[in-house]
Each structure stands twice: as C-alpha cells, then as structure tokens.
Length: 278
Image 1 (tube, rainbow, N blue to C red):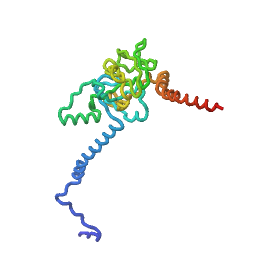
Image 2 (image 1 turned 180 degrees about the vertical axis):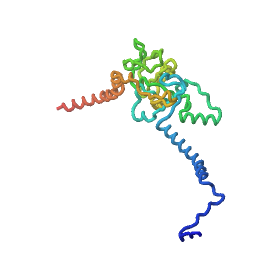
Image 3 (image 1 turned 30 degrees about the vertical axis):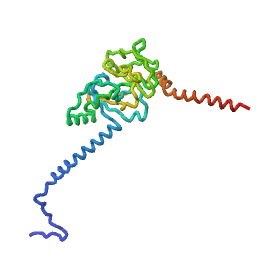
Image 4 (image 1 turned 90 degrees about the vertical axis):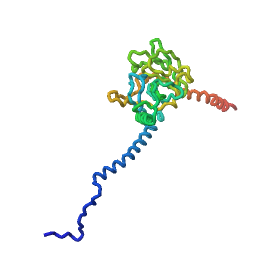
C-alpha cells in the first residue's frame, strides 16, 4: 500500500537529460576564473616590485663570495625613504648612460623571448637589465676615502677598514685613490675587487667615480635562491667602529650646522653691540 504525500510536500523531479553534472560545472567555473586570478597576481607583483620589494638576479662575480653568480636577492625599495644610505649597505643602482655593463646579455630577438625576459626580470629569475649594478657602499657624502694606508687597507675619514667580506686572498685594491665623496653621491666597490668594475674604474668621470644617490634602487637584504645560499646581508662590523661613525658625524651632519652657525654669528654679535649702545 502506497503512503500518500503530505499536502505541502512535492515530489523531487529528476534533472533534465542535458543538464551538466555538478562537478563539471564547478570545474568549468574554476577555469573561467583562472585568467582573472592570474591578472590579479600579476598586478600585485608589479605593485610590490615598483614600490616595496624587488627580486634581482646576480649575473656576475663582482660581489663574490658574498653573492655568487645566479644568486637571487631581495631588494628593499622603501628603506631609503625612511633613512639615509649607510656605509656597508649592499645596494642596487642604475648605471644607465654612465656605467658600462659588466656582463653582456644577448638581446631578445622575438616577442616571445622578450616576454619571457620581462617575466624573468619581474620575478628575479633572470637579469632585469644590463645597467643595474650591485655593489657595497664604502663612502657616503662628506667621507674621505683613501687607498691605501701603510698596511694596504682602505681608510674612511682616517679610520682603517678590516674587510672580511673580500674575496679570499684578494687585496683591498690594486688602484690608488684619494676621494672626498661629494654631496648627494656614494663611493661603491665590489667585494671581488679584482673582478669588479666599480667606482675605481670611473675616477675620471664626472663625480670622480661616485654614483648619484637618486640612482639607487634599494638595499639588498637577503639571498633567497638557491636555498643552499640563503643568508641575510647585514652591515659588517667594520663600518660600525665608533671612530668611523664619529668622524662621519663631523664630516656630514655637523657640516651644515657649522655653516649655519658661521652665518648667524655675525648677526648675533651685531645685535649685542647695538644693545650696549647708550
């Protein structure tokens, strides 16, 4: 005997014969969303690269053994909006129209290879540009950088640098120089001095081999690839010597104050004499 349905109940109708299976609909929706997700990811990558952090590929051995060929580093592009460049920082800067490339990168020959090269540069999988350089800051504005003292060491403001980051067995420099870093510029050198075309190779250029601070892209702070090379890139202890930082304060920060004081002193003396008059 069949039990009758309640008055408010309805019999479930079978789906139409041509209706897609539920799993197939979900799968189809996912494929439709994939281009949108890829577009969002690309936009986010571009924003991060432009304003925050960028990955860079190391194409040459000029910073060995601190950085090896084919290493990938992350570069902080915000830090120098918050503080000045410090001695010992490893920086990436643009040498467009001023420095010749250290490594020749064959140009892309077709649209596909150009697109691949662009993606590689975006994610730090390959060289981003021949004119991007990575070096260590040795002198900041106002510093007196000299090579070399009687023991063959580079000095900054008369303070000798002990440089444990140099390529093993290498001397601080085979090129003599005596430079006062101009305002708004930096003296930079590679850690593999015999294999680095750095400030020493541009002593005859405008600025005496120094680079403009406004060409600095950012500070390299960590090696992210390969995993076996992972390491942070802190400021070496030699740049934290008290005598060096004290000399730097006199040479840079104190100079504008001294100039201001010299300008104000005659005015103060004139006002004091005027008050003493009957």
